Image 1 (tube, rainbow, N blue to C red):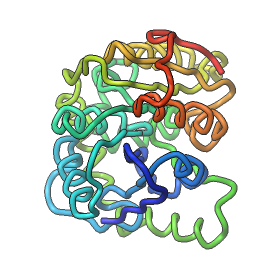
Image 2: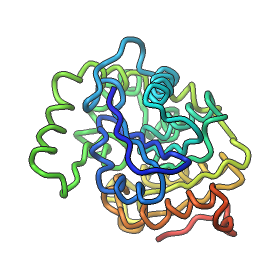
Image 3: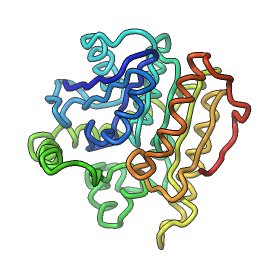
Length: 282
């Protein structure tokens, strides 16, 4: 399995990607965050440069593999989990299984397990996840949710080619297995938390102006993002003005502005925020 660690300091930020993406989606923010602390991005088994691994692709097995990867890569000590899209469920599973390791969570438009029990997001096609994906792709729903593979315009031609090849035929089966486990992953994580006073930062896409026919999805997504604040008494939600689902690509400036002080607050080197429990648009 592939992991790339840069920078120095504690806690270590561990970056977890959305469905079908790999570590390259973090290439705009990792160098900047590495100026504050150690940052590790990785590819889940069967994506990017990580070879497929045996076993199921549900949340519990995925975080078990991540835990072993961090151990073998000598990533010890406290970590802050930063998960985009579907990884929103995986970081919750990790924090539940290994609470002693986790000192903070950052959701980047993270999926909620509730969406996989929400009729708007499931319907009868939800019983056949791969068919559900194909159907929603036609309807344009992935852009709102978690599935669209978006490449940073700053990626050079070689990196883009490697990224495309890494997510094509050789990894179709693991991706299908992961998608086929979405409902099981939701069942494994829907009762995770609350996490007491664990610091949690929630970035959410801007759903104030949804495209035609998407208003219900946008409203439901926003409600589930708001509900993430209940996971901790020390949570804050920030709506990324003008951004879609890939906030770390479209609003890099917001990530760079908010995450470093979040790390310093965990370290205790700066005062704690006075606006826990709030939702603001920036």
